[in-house]
Image (tube, rainbow, N blue to C red; front, side, top):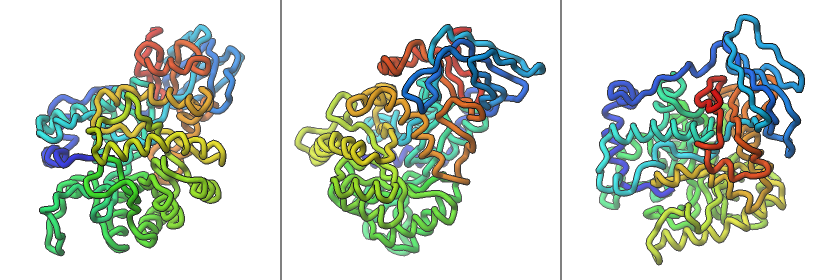
Length: 464
Protein backbone atom coordinates (compact mmCIF):
# COMPACT_ATOMS: atom_id res chain seq x y z
CA UNK A 1 0.00 0.00 0.00
CA UNK A 2 1.86 3.08 -1.20
CA UNK A 3 0.19 6.21 0.14
CA UNK A 4 1.50 9.61 -0.87
CA UNK A 5 1.92 12.48 1.55
CA UNK A 6 -0.30 14.67 -0.59
CA UNK A 7 -3.26 12.57 0.53
CA UNK A 8 -2.93 13.85 4.05
CA UNK A 9 -3.75 17.45 3.30
CA UNK A 10 -6.95 16.36 1.64
CA UNK A 11 -7.86 14.10 4.52
CA UNK A 12 -7.35 17.02 6.91
CA UNK A 13 -9.89 19.13 5.10
CA UNK A 14 -12.29 16.24 4.78
CA UNK A 15 -12.32 15.44 8.46
CA UNK A 16 -12.62 19.06 9.51
CA UNK A 17 -15.75 19.41 7.40
CA UNK A 18 -17.10 16.11 8.69
CA UNK A 19 -17.92 13.10 6.61
CA UNK A 20 -21.63 12.90 7.15
CA UNK A 21 -21.94 16.66 6.87
CA UNK A 22 -20.37 16.50 3.44
CA UNK A 23 -22.58 13.64 2.36
CA UNK A 24 -25.79 15.37 3.42
CA UNK A 25 -25.10 19.09 3.03
CA UNK A 26 -23.53 19.00 -0.41
CA UNK A 27 -26.12 16.70 -1.93
CA UNK A 28 -23.77 13.75 -2.30
CA UNK A 29 -26.05 11.30 -0.61
CA UNK A 30 -28.30 9.21 -2.80
CA UNK A 31 -31.58 8.04 -1.39
CA UNK A 32 -32.26 4.33 -1.60
CA UNK A 33 -34.45 1.78 0.12
CA UNK A 34 -33.72 0.85 3.72
CA UNK A 35 -30.65 -1.35 4.22
CA UNK A 36 -33.03 -4.06 5.42
CA UNK A 37 -35.96 -4.77 3.14
CA UNK A 38 -39.28 -4.74 4.92
CA UNK A 39 -40.70 -8.16 5.71
CA UNK A 40 -43.83 -7.18 3.77
CA UNK A 41 -41.86 -7.25 0.50
CA UNK A 42 -40.92 -10.35 -1.45
CA UNK A 43 -39.00 -11.09 -4.64
CA UNK A 44 -39.55 -14.34 -6.51
CA UNK A 45 -36.85 -15.41 -8.97
CA UNK A 46 -38.40 -17.97 -11.30
CA UNK A 47 -36.77 -20.33 -13.80
CA UNK A 48 -33.16 -19.71 -12.81
CA UNK A 49 -30.15 -21.99 -12.69
CA UNK A 50 -28.24 -21.50 -9.47
CA UNK A 51 -24.55 -21.21 -8.70
CA UNK A 52 -24.90 -21.49 -4.95
CA UNK A 53 -21.37 -20.33 -4.05
CA UNK A 54 -20.19 -23.83 -3.21
CA UNK A 55 -21.07 -26.42 -5.86
CA UNK A 56 -18.93 -26.48 -9.03
CA UNK A 57 -22.06 -27.20 -11.10
CA UNK A 58 -25.18 -25.18 -11.76
CA UNK A 59 -28.52 -26.44 -10.52
CA UNK A 60 -31.32 -27.36 -12.83
CA UNK A 61 -34.21 -24.92 -13.34
CA UNK A 62 -35.24 -23.64 -9.92
CA UNK A 63 -37.03 -20.86 -8.08
CA UNK A 64 -35.72 -18.66 -5.26
CA UNK A 65 -37.97 -16.70 -2.93
CA UNK A 66 -36.67 -13.69 -1.00
CA UNK A 67 -38.80 -12.32 1.83
CA UNK A 68 -37.51 -9.15 3.45
CA UNK A 69 -33.73 -9.42 3.42
CA UNK A 70 -33.52 -13.23 3.62
CA UNK A 71 -33.75 -16.12 1.20
CA UNK A 72 -36.82 -17.96 2.45
CA UNK A 73 -36.94 -20.75 -0.11
CA UNK A 74 -34.95 -22.50 -2.86
CA UNK A 75 -36.81 -25.18 -4.78
CA UNK A 76 -37.44 -26.84 -8.13
CA UNK A 77 -41.13 -26.61 -7.22
CA UNK A 78 -43.29 -23.51 -7.26
CA UNK A 79 -42.82 -21.19 -4.29
CA UNK A 80 -45.63 -19.13 -2.83
CA UNK A 81 -44.86 -15.66 -1.43
CA UNK A 82 -46.62 -14.55 1.77
CA UNK A 83 -50.17 -13.48 1.04
CA UNK A 84 -49.60 -10.08 2.66
CA UNK A 85 -46.36 -9.30 0.81
CA UNK A 86 -45.87 -6.94 -2.10
CA UNK A 87 -44.28 -9.28 -4.63
CA UNK A 88 -41.80 -8.60 -7.44
CA UNK A 89 -41.55 -11.52 -9.88
CA UNK A 90 -38.41 -11.92 -12.00
CA UNK A 91 -38.41 -14.59 -14.71
CA UNK A 92 -34.80 -15.54 -15.20
CA UNK A 93 -35.57 -17.53 -18.39
CA UNK A 94 -32.84 -20.01 -17.50
CA UNK A 95 -30.21 -17.44 -16.59
CA UNK A 96 -27.81 -17.93 -13.67
CA UNK A 97 -28.55 -16.66 -10.16
CA UNK A 98 -25.51 -16.44 -7.89
CA UNK A 99 -24.36 -14.79 -4.64
CA UNK A 100 -23.11 -11.22 -4.65
CA UNK A 101 -19.34 -10.90 -5.08
CA UNK A 102 -17.02 -10.07 -2.16
CA UNK A 103 -13.72 -8.13 -2.30
CA UNK A 104 -11.65 -9.13 0.73
CA UNK A 105 -9.03 -6.37 0.39
CA UNK A 106 -10.33 -3.00 -0.74
CA UNK A 107 -9.60 0.69 -0.06
CA UNK A 108 -12.80 2.60 -0.71
CA UNK A 109 -11.27 6.04 -0.20
CA UNK A 110 -7.86 5.65 -1.75
CA UNK A 111 -8.50 3.73 -4.93
CA UNK A 112 -10.24 6.37 -7.03
CA UNK A 113 -8.01 9.36 -6.21
CA UNK A 114 -5.25 10.11 -8.68
CA UNK A 115 -1.67 10.79 -7.69
CA UNK A 116 -1.94 14.27 -9.23
CA UNK A 117 -4.89 15.03 -6.96
CA UNK A 118 -3.02 13.89 -3.92
CA UNK A 119 0.38 15.43 -4.57
CA UNK A 120 -0.88 18.72 -6.02
CA UNK A 121 -3.99 18.85 -3.79
CA UNK A 122 -6.12 19.56 -6.85
CA UNK A 123 -9.23 17.96 -5.36
CA UNK A 124 -11.36 19.62 -2.71
CA UNK A 125 -12.58 17.66 0.32
CA UNK A 126 -16.05 17.68 -1.20
CA UNK A 127 -14.69 16.19 -4.42
CA UNK A 128 -12.76 13.53 -2.52
CA UNK A 129 -15.84 12.39 -0.67
CA UNK A 130 -17.98 12.58 -3.77
CA UNK A 131 -15.54 10.16 -5.36
CA UNK A 132 -15.64 7.89 -2.32
CA UNK A 133 -19.42 7.83 -2.40
CA UNK A 134 -19.47 7.33 -6.16
CA UNK A 135 -16.89 4.57 -5.82
CA UNK A 136 -19.03 2.79 -3.24
CA UNK A 137 -22.08 3.04 -5.49
CA UNK A 138 -20.15 1.89 -8.56
CA UNK A 139 -18.72 -1.02 -6.60
CA UNK A 140 -22.19 -2.25 -5.75
CA UNK A 141 -23.26 -1.82 -9.36
CA UNK A 142 -20.30 -3.96 -10.40
CA UNK A 143 -21.88 -6.75 -8.38
CA UNK A 144 -19.71 -6.44 -5.28
CA UNK A 145 -22.17 -6.50 -2.42
CA UNK A 146 -19.55 -6.80 0.38
CA UNK A 147 -16.02 -5.47 0.89
CA UNK A 148 -13.40 -5.67 3.63
CA UNK A 149 -11.77 -2.24 3.77
CA UNK A 150 -8.14 -2.76 4.77
CA UNK A 151 -7.08 0.75 5.87
CA UNK A 152 -8.51 4.22 5.61
CA UNK A 153 -11.04 6.66 7.10
CA UNK A 154 -14.09 4.68 6.06
CA UNK A 155 -16.17 4.50 9.25
CA UNK A 156 -18.51 7.37 8.36
CA UNK A 157 -18.98 6.15 4.80
CA UNK A 158 -19.95 2.74 6.16
CA UNK A 159 -22.46 4.33 8.53
CA UNK A 160 -23.95 6.38 5.70
CA UNK A 161 -24.34 3.24 3.57
CA UNK A 162 -25.91 1.33 6.44
CA UNK A 163 -28.26 4.24 7.19
CA UNK A 164 -29.43 4.30 3.58
CA UNK A 165 -28.14 7.77 2.67
CA UNK A 166 -25.43 6.39 0.36
CA UNK A 167 -25.68 3.45 -2.01
CA UNK A 168 -22.86 0.97 -1.55
CA UNK A 169 -21.77 -2.47 -0.42
CA UNK A 170 -21.61 -3.88 3.07
CA UNK A 171 -18.31 -2.70 4.60
CA UNK A 172 -16.05 -4.45 7.12
CA UNK A 173 -13.75 -1.57 8.22
CA UNK A 174 -10.24 -1.85 9.64
CA UNK A 175 -9.74 1.85 10.30
CA UNK A 176 -6.17 3.11 10.57
CA UNK A 177 -3.36 0.71 9.69
CA UNK A 178 -1.11 0.30 12.75
CA UNK A 179 2.57 0.77 11.91
CA UNK A 180 5.92 1.07 13.62
CA UNK A 181 8.12 4.14 13.16
CA UNK A 182 9.58 3.92 9.67
CA UNK A 183 7.09 1.21 8.80
CA UNK A 184 4.66 0.74 5.96
CA UNK A 185 2.18 3.14 7.52
CA UNK A 186 4.61 5.91 8.49
CA UNK A 187 3.96 8.73 6.01
CA UNK A 188 5.86 11.50 7.79
CA UNK A 189 8.64 13.56 6.28
CA UNK A 190 12.08 13.16 7.79
CA UNK A 191 11.76 16.78 8.93
CA UNK A 192 9.12 15.62 11.43
CA UNK A 193 11.62 13.45 13.29
CA UNK A 194 12.44 12.81 16.03
CA UNK A 195 9.14 12.29 17.77
CA UNK A 196 9.09 13.49 21.36
CA UNK A 197 6.47 13.14 24.12
CA UNK A 198 5.18 16.59 23.15
CA UNK A 199 5.14 16.06 19.36
CA UNK A 200 1.83 16.45 17.59
CA UNK A 201 0.41 13.42 15.86
CA UNK A 202 1.12 13.28 12.16
CA UNK A 203 -1.72 14.18 9.81
CA UNK A 204 -2.17 10.57 8.77
CA UNK A 205 -2.65 9.56 12.40
CA UNK A 206 -4.98 12.42 13.27
CA UNK A 207 -7.35 11.57 10.49
CA UNK A 208 -7.37 7.80 10.48
CA UNK A 209 -5.12 6.74 7.60
CA UNK A 210 -2.55 5.11 9.87
CA UNK A 211 -1.47 4.94 13.51
CA UNK A 212 2.22 4.97 14.43
CA UNK A 213 2.76 2.85 17.53
CA UNK A 214 6.05 1.64 19.02
CA UNK A 215 6.23 -0.76 21.93
CA UNK A 216 3.56 -2.92 23.48
CA UNK A 217 1.65 -0.14 25.32
CA UNK A 218 1.31 2.00 22.19
CA UNK A 219 0.20 -0.95 20.06
CA UNK A 220 -2.37 -1.87 22.67
CA UNK A 221 -3.74 1.67 22.72
CA UNK A 222 -3.83 2.04 18.93
CA UNK A 223 -5.59 -1.30 18.49
CA UNK A 224 -8.17 -0.42 21.11
CA UNK A 225 -8.79 2.96 19.48
CA UNK A 226 -9.67 1.30 16.15
CA UNK A 227 -11.98 -1.11 17.91
CA UNK A 228 -13.60 1.80 19.72
CA UNK A 229 -14.23 3.49 16.37
CA UNK A 230 -15.95 0.38 15.04
CA UNK A 231 -13.24 -1.75 13.40
CA UNK A 232 -14.41 -5.24 12.53
CA UNK A 233 -10.78 -6.41 12.43
CA UNK A 234 -7.37 -4.85 13.10
CA UNK A 235 -4.81 -4.16 10.34
CA UNK A 236 -1.10 -4.16 11.26
CA UNK A 237 1.86 -3.47 8.96
CA UNK A 238 4.28 -6.33 9.64
CA UNK A 239 6.56 -5.87 6.64
CA UNK A 240 7.81 -3.56 3.92
CA UNK A 241 5.89 -2.48 0.84
CA UNK A 242 6.22 -1.74 -2.85
CA UNK A 243 5.78 2.03 -2.80
CA UNK A 244 6.77 2.79 0.79
CA UNK A 245 9.03 5.76 1.37
CA UNK A 246 11.31 4.29 4.03
CA UNK A 247 10.80 0.51 4.28
CA UNK A 248 12.12 -1.75 1.51
CA UNK A 249 10.02 -4.79 0.76
CA UNK A 250 12.41 -7.19 2.51
CA UNK A 251 12.03 -5.43 5.88
CA UNK A 252 10.21 -7.25 8.69
CA UNK A 253 8.43 -4.89 11.05
CA UNK A 254 7.47 -5.01 14.74
CA UNK A 255 8.67 -7.49 17.29
CA UNK A 256 6.69 -10.59 17.98
CA UNK A 257 5.63 -9.12 21.34
CA UNK A 258 4.28 -5.95 19.68
CA UNK A 259 2.24 -7.90 17.14
CA UNK A 260 1.00 -10.17 19.92
CA UNK A 261 -0.24 -7.07 21.76
CA UNK A 262 -2.49 -6.22 18.82
CA UNK A 263 -3.63 -9.85 18.65
CA UNK A 264 -4.53 -9.85 22.36
CA UNK A 265 -6.47 -6.61 21.98
CA UNK A 266 -8.42 -8.05 19.06
CA UNK A 267 -9.02 -11.37 20.78
CA UNK A 268 -10.36 -9.58 23.84
CA UNK A 269 -12.92 -8.04 21.47
CA UNK A 270 -13.55 -11.47 19.89
CA UNK A 271 -12.05 -10.53 16.53
CA UNK A 272 -8.69 -10.89 14.79
CA UNK A 273 -5.60 -9.22 13.31
CA UNK A 274 -4.69 -9.13 9.61
CA UNK A 275 -1.16 -8.11 8.65
CA UNK A 276 0.41 -6.53 5.59
CA UNK A 277 3.35 -8.86 4.87
CA UNK A 278 5.11 -10.27 1.82
CA UNK A 279 8.22 -12.14 2.99
CA UNK A 280 8.77 -15.40 4.86
CA UNK A 281 10.31 -13.67 7.88
CA UNK A 282 7.48 -11.15 8.24
CA UNK A 283 4.77 -13.75 7.69
CA UNK A 284 6.27 -16.32 10.05
CA UNK A 285 6.77 -13.79 12.85
CA UNK A 286 3.19 -12.60 12.49
CA UNK A 287 1.85 -16.15 12.63
CA UNK A 288 3.88 -16.92 15.76
CA UNK A 289 2.28 -13.82 17.30
CA UNK A 290 -1.19 -15.21 16.59
CA UNK A 291 -2.51 -13.30 13.56
CA UNK A 292 -5.30 -14.92 11.56
CA UNK A 293 -4.90 -13.38 8.10
CA UNK A 294 -1.88 -12.59 5.91
CA UNK A 295 -2.58 -9.81 3.43
CA UNK A 296 -0.46 -10.33 0.28
CA UNK A 297 2.19 -13.02 0.97
CA UNK A 298 3.45 -13.16 -2.62
CA UNK A 299 7.02 -13.88 -1.53
CA UNK A 300 6.33 -16.82 0.79
CA UNK A 301 8.40 -19.99 0.49
CA UNK A 302 7.55 -23.65 1.07
CA UNK A 303 8.37 -23.57 4.77
CA UNK A 304 6.11 -20.57 5.26
CA UNK A 305 3.26 -22.18 3.33
CA UNK A 306 3.55 -25.25 5.54
CA UNK A 307 3.33 -23.05 8.64
CA UNK A 308 0.27 -21.23 7.27
CA UNK A 309 -1.39 -24.60 6.67
CA UNK A 310 -0.43 -25.96 10.08
CA UNK A 311 -1.84 -22.95 11.94
CA UNK A 312 -4.95 -22.61 9.78
CA UNK A 313 -4.13 -18.97 8.91
CA UNK A 314 -5.84 -17.21 6.01
CA UNK A 315 -3.84 -16.13 2.97
CA UNK A 316 -5.62 -13.06 1.58
CA UNK A 317 -3.93 -12.59 -1.79
CA UNK A 318 -4.32 -10.45 -4.87
CA UNK A 319 -3.34 -11.45 -8.43
CA UNK A 320 -0.46 -8.97 -8.66
CA UNK A 321 1.17 -9.42 -12.07
CA UNK A 322 3.22 -7.19 -14.32
CA UNK A 323 0.27 -6.46 -16.57
CA UNK A 324 -2.25 -3.76 -17.38
CA UNK A 325 -3.42 -3.63 -13.76
CA UNK A 326 0.01 -2.98 -12.25
CA UNK A 327 0.44 0.46 -10.68
CA UNK A 328 2.85 2.56 -12.78
CA UNK A 329 6.30 3.19 -11.28
CA UNK A 330 9.39 4.63 -13.03
CA UNK A 331 11.61 1.99 -14.56
CA UNK A 332 14.65 1.35 -12.40
CA UNK A 333 13.09 2.88 -9.30
CA UNK A 334 13.09 0.91 -6.02
CA UNK A 335 9.31 0.69 -6.20
CA UNK A 336 9.45 -0.76 -9.71
CA UNK A 337 12.05 -3.33 -8.63
CA UNK A 338 9.89 -4.36 -5.68
CA UNK A 339 6.84 -4.53 -7.90
CA UNK A 340 8.59 -6.90 -10.31
CA UNK A 341 9.74 -9.03 -7.38
CA UNK A 342 6.17 -9.35 -6.13
CA UNK A 343 4.83 -10.10 -9.62
CA UNK A 344 7.41 -12.83 -10.05
CA UNK A 345 6.42 -14.34 -6.72
CA UNK A 346 2.67 -14.37 -7.39
CA UNK A 347 2.68 -17.59 -9.43
CA UNK A 348 4.73 -19.41 -6.80
CA UNK A 349 2.52 -18.19 -3.95
CA UNK A 350 -0.69 -19.35 -5.61
CA UNK A 351 0.88 -22.69 -6.48
CA UNK A 352 1.91 -23.14 -2.85
CA UNK A 353 -1.56 -22.15 -1.72
CA UNK A 354 -3.03 -24.89 -3.89
CA UNK A 355 -0.39 -27.46 -2.92
CA UNK A 356 -1.05 -27.05 0.80
CA UNK A 357 -4.78 -26.33 0.46
CA UNK A 358 -4.44 -22.99 2.21
CA UNK A 359 -7.53 -20.97 3.13
CA UNK A 360 -7.12 -18.45 0.31
CA UNK A 361 -9.16 -15.27 -0.04
CA UNK A 362 -9.24 -12.90 -3.01
CA UNK A 363 -9.11 -9.11 -3.13
CA UNK A 364 -8.01 -6.22 -5.34
CA UNK A 365 -5.98 -3.76 -3.20
CA UNK A 366 -6.37 -1.02 -5.83
CA UNK A 367 -4.78 2.34 -4.93
CA UNK A 368 -4.68 5.72 -6.72
CA UNK A 369 -6.07 4.22 -9.90
CA UNK A 370 -9.61 5.24 -10.90
CA UNK A 371 -9.39 3.17 -14.07
CA UNK A 372 -8.11 0.19 -12.10
CA UNK A 373 -11.04 0.44 -9.72
CA UNK A 374 -13.45 -0.16 -12.60
CA UNK A 375 -11.62 -3.42 -13.42
CA UNK A 376 -12.66 -5.19 -10.23
CA UNK A 377 -14.38 -7.97 -12.14
CA UNK A 378 -11.51 -8.28 -14.61
CA UNK A 379 -9.06 -8.70 -11.72
CA UNK A 380 -11.22 -11.53 -10.43
CA UNK A 381 -11.52 -13.16 -13.85
CA UNK A 382 -7.73 -13.30 -14.26
CA UNK A 383 -7.66 -15.79 -11.37
CA UNK A 384 -8.35 -18.54 -13.95
CA UNK A 385 -4.57 -18.46 -14.45
CA UNK A 386 -4.47 -20.66 -11.31
CA UNK A 387 -8.03 -21.88 -10.64
CA UNK A 388 -11.09 -23.11 -12.51
CA UNK A 389 -13.93 -20.60 -13.01
CA UNK A 390 -15.98 -22.43 -10.38
CA UNK A 391 -13.09 -22.23 -7.90
CA UNK A 392 -12.62 -18.53 -8.65
CA UNK A 393 -16.28 -17.70 -8.07
CA UNK A 394 -16.39 -19.85 -4.94
CA UNK A 395 -13.41 -17.92 -3.59
CA UNK A 396 -15.11 -14.58 -4.27
CA UNK A 397 -18.37 -15.66 -2.64
CA UNK A 398 -18.60 -18.33 0.05
CA UNK A 399 -14.86 -18.50 0.81
CA UNK A 400 -14.47 -14.74 1.22
CA UNK A 401 -17.65 -14.79 3.32
CA UNK A 402 -15.95 -17.21 5.72
CA UNK A 403 -13.14 -14.70 6.18
CA UNK A 404 -15.62 -11.89 6.83
CA UNK A 405 -17.31 -14.03 9.48
CA UNK A 406 -13.97 -14.33 11.31
CA UNK A 407 -14.88 -11.00 12.94
CA UNK A 408 -17.28 -12.91 15.17
CA UNK A 409 -19.38 -10.54 17.32
CA UNK A 410 -17.68 -7.59 15.59
CA UNK A 411 -19.21 -8.72 12.29
CA UNK A 412 -21.48 -5.77 11.43
CA UNK A 413 -23.81 -7.94 9.35
CA UNK A 414 -24.61 -11.20 11.18
CA UNK A 415 -26.02 -13.89 8.93
CA UNK A 416 -24.88 -16.15 6.11
CA UNK A 417 -23.39 -14.47 3.06
CA UNK A 418 -21.78 -15.71 -0.13
CA UNK A 419 -24.23 -18.55 -0.60
CA UNK A 420 -27.66 -19.20 -2.12
CA UNK A 421 -29.58 -21.27 0.39
CA UNK A 422 -32.61 -20.94 2.62
CA UNK A 423 -31.90 -18.64 5.54
CA UNK A 424 -28.98 -16.80 3.91
CA UNK A 425 -28.96 -13.03 3.52
CA UNK A 426 -30.27 -12.02 0.12
CA UNK A 427 -27.24 -10.63 -1.74
CA UNK A 428 -27.83 -11.93 -5.27
CA UNK A 429 -26.84 -11.40 -8.91
CA UNK A 430 -28.73 -12.54 -11.99
CA UNK A 431 -26.19 -13.10 -14.77
CA UNK A 432 -26.91 -12.94 -18.49
CA UNK A 433 -25.10 -16.17 -19.24
CA UNK A 434 -23.17 -18.89 -17.45
CA UNK A 435 -20.11 -17.52 -15.60
CA UNK A 436 -18.88 -21.06 -14.89
CA UNK A 437 -18.54 -21.60 -18.62
CA UNK A 438 -17.48 -18.02 -19.44
CA UNK A 439 -16.02 -16.19 -16.47
CA UNK A 440 -15.29 -13.16 -18.67
CA UNK A 441 -18.96 -12.27 -18.22
CA UNK A 442 -18.09 -10.69 -14.88
CA UNK A 443 -15.71 -8.27 -16.61
CA UNK A 444 -18.70 -6.39 -18.04
CA UNK A 445 -21.17 -6.05 -15.15
CA UNK A 446 -23.08 -3.23 -16.80
CA UNK A 447 -24.20 -5.55 -19.58
CA UNK A 448 -24.12 -8.95 -17.91
CA UNK A 449 -25.45 -8.40 -14.39
CA UNK A 450 -29.13 -7.99 -15.14
CA UNK A 451 -30.29 -7.90 -11.52
CA UNK A 452 -28.29 -6.78 -8.50
CA UNK A 453 -29.77 -7.30 -5.04
CA UNK A 454 -28.22 -6.44 -1.66
CA UNK A 455 -29.96 -7.24 1.61
CA UNK A 456 -33.17 -8.05 -0.23
CA UNK A 457 -33.28 -4.69 -2.02
CA UNK A 458 -33.10 -4.57 -5.82
CA UNK A 459 -30.67 -1.88 -6.99
CA UNK A 460 -30.68 -2.88 -10.66
CA UNK A 461 -33.22 -4.74 -12.74
CA UNK A 462 -32.85 -4.75 -16.51
CA UNK A 463 -35.68 -7.29 -16.83
CA UNK A 464 -38.25 -4.94 -15.35
